[in-house]
Length: 403
Ligand code: DSN
Image (cartoon, rainbow, N blue to C red):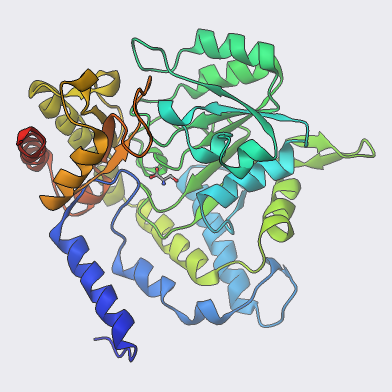
C-alpha cells in the first residue's frame, strides 16, 4: 500500500499503471519489469552520491555502493559468459544514448569518422545521424540495407568502409528485424582498420537467453540498454575487451577500458544513479535463470507468428519476416494502405500501442512515415503465446482495414 502524500502525482502514476495494464503493448523497445526491479529503483540508494568508481570514490559513505556496483558488474559479465580477465564492463551509463556517446568520446578522435546504419534503414540516432551529437561532433558515414532483400548487404558495406576508412563501425539497430552477422562485420572492420562496436540494445535479452547471435566473439566494444528485451530498468552497460589499447598523445598505449571509464565519468556524467545500478543487478540475475531463457525463445516465436499472420492477411512485412522480437510493417504499401501515423493512431484507439516508423527507401516523412514497428517483448512477459499473437495480428488487421 502506498503512503504517497503528493496526491496529484500519485493519481497520475495510478492512471499510467492502469493504462499499461489495459493496453496491448507492442512497443518493441519496452518491457514490463519485476516488482524487485521497481523496489530497487524506488530505494534509498537514490539519496547517495558516489562519483568515481568502486574503491575510488570522491565521496565518503560508499561502503555499500561499492558492493552494489561490483555485484552488478560481476553479474553483467557472468550473464554473457565473459571472463573478467578478458572483459571490462561499465555499469554507470544513464541510458543508451549517453553510453554510445561515451564510447565515441573515448575512442574516436575529433577528426574521426563513425560508420553506422542509417535511421530510415533501421539504425539509431546515436549511430552517427546528423541530428544527434554523434553526427555533429564527428563526421559520419551511413550504410543502408539492400533495396530488394531489405537486409544488410556486406559487399556494399565493405566497399563503403574501405573507401571511407571509418574509425569505428557500429553494428546494431533500433528497427531491423533480422539477425546481424557479427563475424562479417568483424571482417569489414579488419579490412578498413576500424574498431568494431556492437550496439545490442534491442536484442540483449535475446542474446542472454541464447535466442539471437552474440556479438561478444567479434566486437571490441558492446553497448546495450537494459530496459528492452533484457527486461530491466532504464539504464545501459558498456562492455569492452581488456586487451584493446590506443596510443595517447605521447605515444603510450592506453586501454579502451580506462578511456571508456573516463569518458563516462567525468567525461559525460557526474554521480552514478545507484538505485538504477542496483535495479540493473536485480534484472541481470533474473535474466540468468532458465525461465528467462524460455522467455527469450518465446519472444522470438511470438514475433514470428505476428509477422507471418500479418503477411498472410496481405500486409507487407519489411524483409519478409523477423529473426528477433521486432517486426516492421509497411502499412503504406506504396499508397494502397494507410500511413504509419494513421495506423499508430487507429491502433491506439483500439488499445494496441505501437510506434510509427520509417521503412527502408522511405518516401514519406518521419512524422508520418510508411510503417509501424511492433515487438513481442512486453506481451511475452505478460505470458502471451503464439495463439495470443495470432489474435493480436487479427485485431491489428481489422483495425488497419476499417475505413
Ligand atoms: N527509442 C529506442 C527505441 O525505441 O528503439 C531507441 O533509443
